[in-house]
Image 1 (cartoon, rainbow, N blue to C red):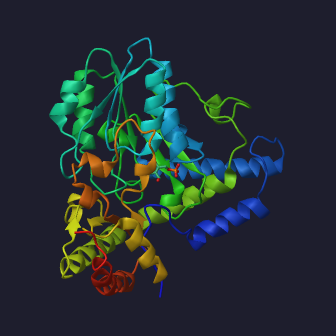
Image 2: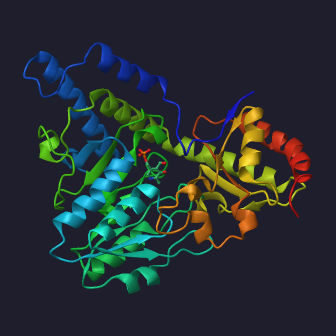
Image 3: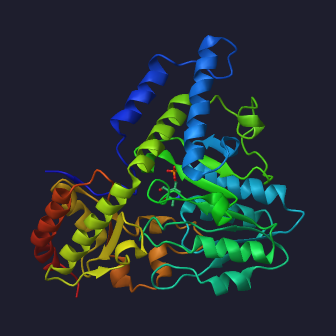
Length: 386
Ligand code: PLP
């Protein structure tokens, strides 16, 4: 048996996504910039994709720009906005628990002379609104906060944060890395006061190498990728029609099944958490119960057993998970990883695994993982350092 419990790393494409990707590669393969029929046909795929995505967010299709994924979306949002607004100020705010795709462009901007404030988080991974309020100054031009943390599933108070920022100064731009939220919950940027929103297709059963950035039409940002002037000159490069069509199909399917998926994911999460608690070994669960954190992520530490050891032991049995501290080898990051920011002891830090689900994950997969843990943990604990 196999249990793929690493859906926050990436997901398998659906058949609907595969079909539209194949069709736009093999039959309707035109370049949307071409003036002939093949081009017009391809252009229609792009237009439809934008329309589908815009509907899921209740925004205008003109505000959706396709990118190569969320890493590019985040880089563009941060660097593009900072460069376009540098005359208004040189201060940016983010959190200490962002993905590297936010932390690294922030580091780059620091090297360009911007000042960056990293908001700390509490033991559950949440920022404090008071810290955010205190951090805002006359020089602040941009705030970037992730919606759902990719390592432990914490949901940040985006609506309250956006309200606070806009009340203080409506000109401050608010960017959200929405990778782990989009397709899992309803997100309406305009209602929330979010100016820019980054999304990746491969986390929601779409293809890899495609994503989008929502940019409110009133917001001015500089393009990062210059060339043939595609996407209104904001993001040049021959349009990735198969990617865009695949992403739109994935988004449509995700939102068509949202309620049942959420209920299913919450059930899986509870089953996993209850199962972990039922094991005789000491296990420390970092993620919050039920809908207090993301429905698809359970992060837990197995004290005394190094995460890599357990990850590979599970892999031997056909179970695929992530080591919660996988990013800690990145020495270039200006701040430590999410888990370090939670002030976990080294013992917990070294022994954390992330189990992440999709709407296609089954209860059997969860049970198989729990049974395997029940067999493996006593064996591996014998070698544990005490
Ligand atoms: N932001 C978050 C929160 C993520 O989880 C990821 C993916 O791991 C990314 C950004 C990067 O997305 P992509 O793989 O599309 O570049």
